[in-house]
Image 1 (cartoon, helix red, strand yellow):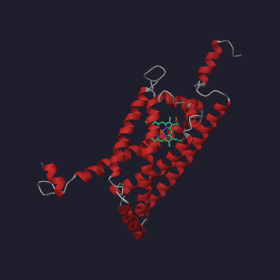
Image 2: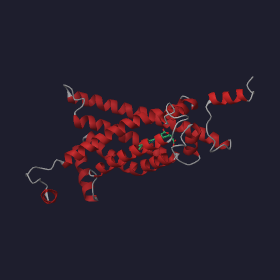
Image 3: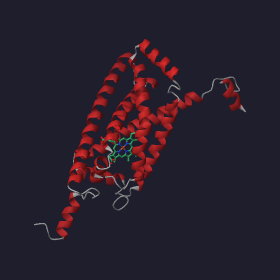
Image 4: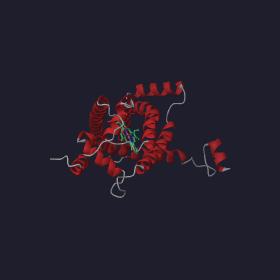
Length: 263
Ligand code: HEM
């Protein structure tokens, strides 16, 4: 009954304004924070390929829990991907509330932002556009990872990027996620006043610089990483070895010793 009244009047039975919008905002911020920090970790882990194939292989096996299960268990990665997917969907649902519902609303918001000529207000449009793009791009990636968690590794990932044509999707997803993630974390700091200190105005300028620096850092790291996977995938395809899995150097040496081939 109270929900029914609130639905019609926008006020609770105690004649108070509903707290629900504030709670939803809180959920949006919390899920955004988790996803933003996750993406930084994710990009650092994925970029392990820049150090060496062996290093990326070791990281993959560690994430599969190789310190608990002999040879690792990809189910752990599937579970992590499901958890991230659920957080991703909740975050997107909360974000939907903020999108204009029709062209008229869009026009009003655009005119307002242009009239204010305020940089942070304009950032909102980038958030809305990149967020919308991620609905599709992020879902495809997460679903593929969830259902192919046993195919992550120096060659398996590179084959997916190159031979399974994921690179065009990754280019778009990388752009969307890097802008959306850093702008989102910056807006969180401003919204909740985390780094306001004694001089919020001066600190906002500092935060803006940090945001710009981080966006460049993760864009450069991301694209360098993507090129590395594309190159490995291309070479693997040219050698006619698509689908073959990477064998870590230590294992190859072990096999050679066992076969008496190492002199
Ligand atoms: C637990 C969840 C996730 C796992 C296990 C995961 C795993 C991976 C892996 C292994 C790659 C390397 C390429 C490949 O194997 O296909 C990759 C690339 C990528 N992932 Fe994820 N991912 C996850 C979630 C996400 C999310 C939520 C996003 C953004 C919405 C994302 C965005 C990207 C992008 C943009 C790339 C390309 C990066 C580059 O090459 O620089 N990932 N991911």
